Length: 244
Image 1 (cartoon, rainbow, N blue to C red):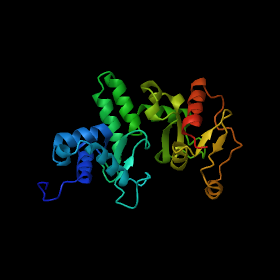
Image 2 (tube, one colour; image 1 turned 60 degrees about the vertical axis):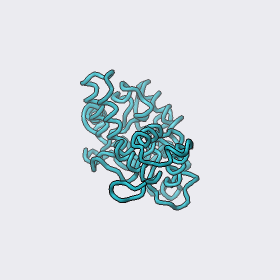
Image 3 (cartoon, rainbow, N blue to C red; image 1 turned 30 degrees about the vertical axis):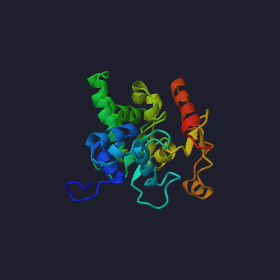
Image 4 (cartoon, rainbow, N blue to C red; image 1 turned 90 degrees about the vertical axis):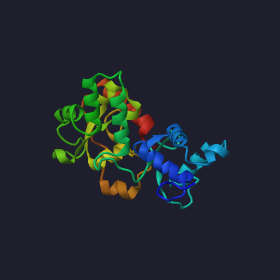
């Protein structure tokens, strides 16, 4: 079949169009449903296993899968390969907000169980501003690790990741740290964490070369008298996020 623009409709083209229509990222089932609703892919009528081909196409065009062998690297697994949520690498709604942020903000806005004030705070927290960030800046004032105090360089980092936290935890200052960009990335990727004494621990996945350049002080105690809640959240980070 040929589209209105004269291009042949394929599994790949339908996945791309569906992800664009769905805001740049979507659950696998949402991609299936959207392709089925569009009803432009001939295989929907002739092949009862067309969904398997959609999934295979996603994997062939994602460099993080075993099925990738050099095809255009168009898709990425948003939460990892086993979570079933796919994103379109090139898609952006807002230059400062990723498709993931847009998706989360959309989900918050559409949740009738969340009161309006909490919705506003959660959305601001996703955008890196507002209540959550302000309270963490008041608590720490500077990057916990480097001491940098220029607010333009500081990020409000969740300890227990947003996707694993409930709405209260997402706004709790005991589930956050103020970090400069490099250390926020290291922490978010699980390349560093903190032990029970609030000393930094470094993942074996970070090379000796990079560890030396970054010059991480593992002897310093970075948080004095942490709350029980912060300790529990950090334990979660060590157990689930930190790469050993």
